[in-house]
Image 1 (tube, rainbow, N blue to C red):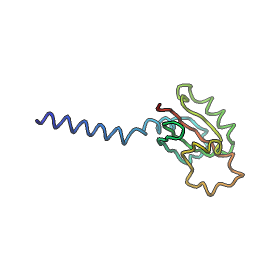
Image 2: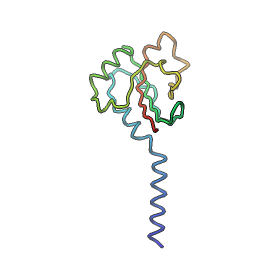
Image 3: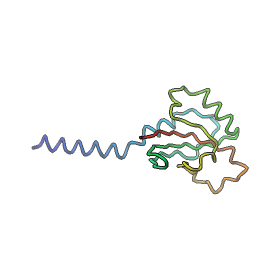
Image 4: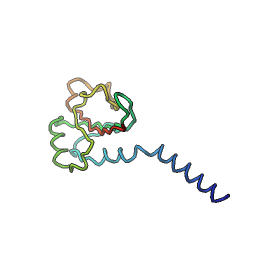
Length: 127
């Protein structure tokens, strides 16, 4: 009886851990992408979405004075292909229809500064 109880408790703990911790590997992957040292991270978020198809999306929003082109080039040069698998780098306001993250200071961003914000996006379909 004690063995069965232990197995049940371990199974329940394992299921709860999976439910609560599934975001951690994606979050770590986004954080491992090397970006220019002088960039400022605004926010990183991971979530499940069912827009168009069931998928996982994670986004890391950074601000860099050099703009999108220089960040894109830096990331491509300083990260391996394996690290960049399922990663897309885009300007801040490119993907409105599937945009999971808005920086906390979104309302403070003036239109002239939009080109300083870059989104590093993880996308994986679950279908």
